[in-house]
Image 1: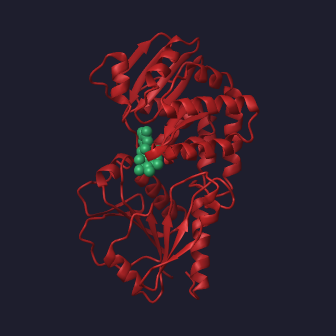
Image 2: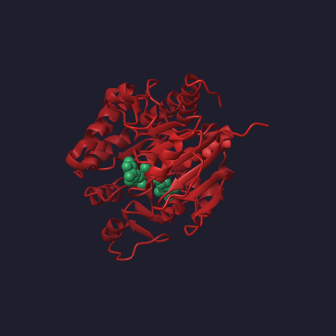
Image 3: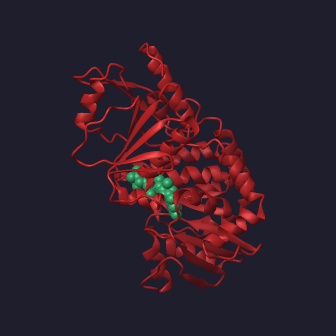
Length: 387
Ligand code: TRH
């Protein structure tokens, strides 16, 4: 029997959970669905452990869910490079590893997996080669994206089927609510998950929910927004398990759940507030209306990225629903007044829900893992090898 193809994924955690979130998801998918021998090198095991609580943050080497997890420390060990080498988000591979790649008879396929963007230029840069200045190695840029000319999005083979099964099965939903220590929401309640960065518009949003006609149940996973939530309700020590009431609004703080369970939270809610990159993609697969708090960058460049996505996402929406989405997302990301924005968005909910289902279906044909493997094999073949 021939050895399975191998893959090394390198992840440098810059902040938060998006970098490791994407790498961990890709690592599992390549191992589980494609039988690859995957090593995930991560420089911050404590962050990894939030997504995969069974991991031990002290171990240099361990196996979790079929993936070999390696602590990427400054002193890099001598290892044989994998067939496919993925450098996530331009995280610069260790010098000794690059030298070992150059020394291989069978040159590894080296890919820089980029951040997700809906901007036009992505299509032109996807798969571009970048020869190493001094070694016989070529790195290729691989861009995730929303159009067929990009690398697509991470999507497990059975995700949409599992989502539909969950949404059609009261017992699974009941088990989910029980697992987070809550009774299922009442039918008249609108259930909203709130995962975002610090946001000046938060008090106004909570105020609009409290004063609105609908009963809102807002679930806040532990994270950066918690101090602001506590401040709004006059609690200096907000933490998981606590709950607050104000008018028609009920808030519950949830523990940060392991990554595979986060999908269930998104599936169980009516509307999801998400952020960064990975939770935003998962909200799209959930097929529910969502509000994106994009990762803020210097000079507001993130607003271009946000608008590029909105243009694409809203193209298939009736103008009124598109306008409502624009208005709320702009206000939320600008930290500005948004109670009218919320009311208009909320009025378009059924239209936005149908659109979210159609959007997920449309995007599901463009799987990042499959595209990546096709590309890997084509480069390997072009070089006269075959894995
Ligand atoms: O955490 P993020 O803000 O991550 C990032 C990083 O900051 C990164 O540097 C930046 O470049 C990028 O955003 C754009 O948001 P993101 O991408 O949504 O990642 C969060 C991960 O956490 C995602 O994989 C889902 C997961 N998660 C859980 O596993 N459990 C939870 O309870 C929650 C709320 C999230």
